[in-house]
Length: 303
Image (cartoon, rainbow, N blue to C red; front, side, top):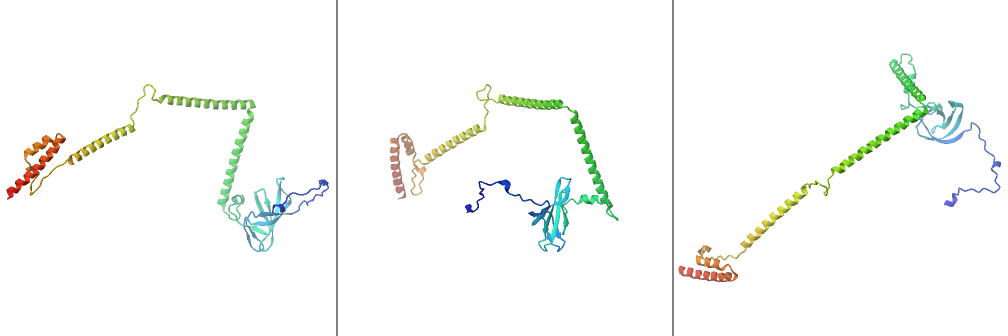
């Protein structure tokens, strides 16, 4: 596909551009342009509305003998109504930065355009709005006064500048630059002094007179250690009590007998033999013999 869109052209070696005749366009020749309608119009022939921004193929020409301020050219455009094909002509208006309709259509009302100036300039006729005209004249007078004040201020400023010599202006500029530089140096010195004072106020660990502050973390660590110690003590006490509960206890019960019925001699003998392991074994045997004798005695009593 790319080879069909070649933009290079062949020029023969004996081509002489001076021999090519130039096309002379007439002075007021019309050219075709593609443009958008800059305003809302209504066709005078059929009443069709043409909205602003509608695209048209228009004919453009220079307005003969019409120039704004002798330098800005005025252009005229011709379009046709899309409904009845009636010709509509309008031209540029550089003085108001707008367009003016010449023939074939009428311009619709556009409130955003500055119509207030036209109302102020128009004088009331036949019992018109006198107050509106008075307000318009007051506003125009106020604008004139503001313009005169601005002009007088500009004249006085230019006169003051005219009286100042170039050497004086340069000296004033140098003095201003010097003041700005001095202010910057003073500000930099103040910042350096503040930094030095801040560094001196900081006390390091190896500095003399350093006092270590008690931080909250140390307190927390002490509290945790105390809590662990208390928990450990409670655990040891619980284990000791459990160990005491697990010690062997022999309860002899037969026919409503209680442990309190054991003779005192057996208890004394068990306490004496509990000091050593051998004593513990002999105490266990004595206790079993005691239980057997107690059972025999109780059987004899019942019989």
